[in-house]
Image (tube, rainbow, N blue to C red; front, side, top):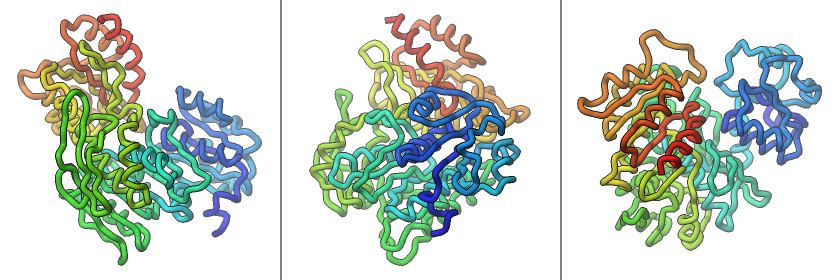
Length: 465
């Protein structure tokens, strides 16, 4: 293994886009290995504040002169950047000009999967919850694991788990920018291939082909756990074992599902050994399917039925993934990262099953102009399952505005008769909520900065009580 592929040869690691949830897990990983860690991000957040306290040297101005001296030697510094960083970013250009070894986050994760047994979770949605649940199950077994997660675990308060005894590493396999093509999974789940990132892929066919390519990267004698019925014909190497799963069908599935009193139980059916009377720690209907996939990976890695059954009820979920912020007989407030039409549909249906007799309202912040342009009708159909929809302006992330594309497109295509509102800023939104006569179940949906509104919404609802 040469210097470009052996992460152990570097003393210092510099991150461009340090505040991203996935990047921050790598920052914590390298800090735990005793490396000097620094980097840049556009804006300070609670996460970057935590990373700085943990030892990372992070600044928030795009300025080469702010790069600390510890990261200026090309022979000892590895540079890691996120695809969301523009190609003309001054610090990135500096490192390129001076012949530093520069890798995408996904490439670094790929290096790790070549030396350890990667348990990877891919798919349009469900990745973060399933991978976090897998890591939790393994951590509560004799197997243990390392894990790079796409969200903050409610059980651990972090997106990184480390083990000095396990050679298993749980990774969320991200299809954005074809990042997951750098991985070499030992075992992988693929949860969905619903179209997304069409700004990258162009067509649904190209998007699905990217997943097909990913299946060819599974190690010989590895495992593919494929959601039954999805649009994908895998291209696995000889010797790879392929299973299917879903809630009610497939090699791995659930039977005897019981939902009531805010709890969900089911029997887990598996070719590796059935487990009766599983209790879900986060009782959302979609988490039955996520749990089936996580238990399958855990069984493949060697977790026992007894270990899995004991651990499952204790799983507390992931921040911003079906994350209850307030829950009592009068008002429920839930935060969910859902930003794809299929995710939103599943989140609303799960909430409807838990609260069939309550009025369900959702605040939705669309994420990206291109995604809104490509799927505004699908968003409208999913949001039309609500009793009331509140739309706020698009969160642009890495994009510039596109003429004619706004939240109004979704708003105009909501079903006739649906109670609906359009707010352009936090003040408008909070005033609307203050003046509402009836709020029973309120969902806050989106992958952008809508999360910053939640403390204010929480306080407002508490005051109503």
